[in-house]
Length: 163
Ligand SMILES: [Zn+2]
Image (cartoon, rainbow, N blue to C red; front, side):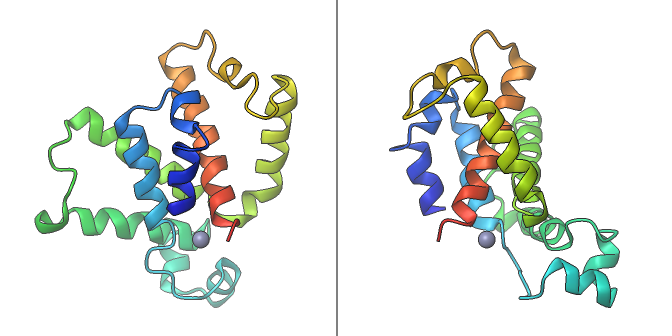
């Protein structure tokens, strides 16, 4: 979460991606909860041992499904729900952003994520903060949502493996 905050602020991710407060809240909440309730086992272990977590996730991103679901289970309790003032539409965005972000921390997506971000960086000739505005240039609302989500997911994955 600390690294994510650094990327949003000093790294200017918030400004470059035109992120609003709800997007930033979603990103930081995903960051702090991305390993929530981790039991120390790998996804491979769960799948091979056919554990309850593996069964709940149908063997797909076992731990990540658990972390995201656990966050939203905690949030359903009134005393924990710090987002109860969000409108229905805002909550939908909050939930969609976070689920995508936590799912993207599954290491099995690493090679694909690296190749996708490398492709984007070379397509727009992005270097040292130059040309970042091209990422979102001329995009409509739904394209912008996707671009923001893709870059935030890549950023969170970087945070995860940066320690
Ligand atoms: Zn982690």
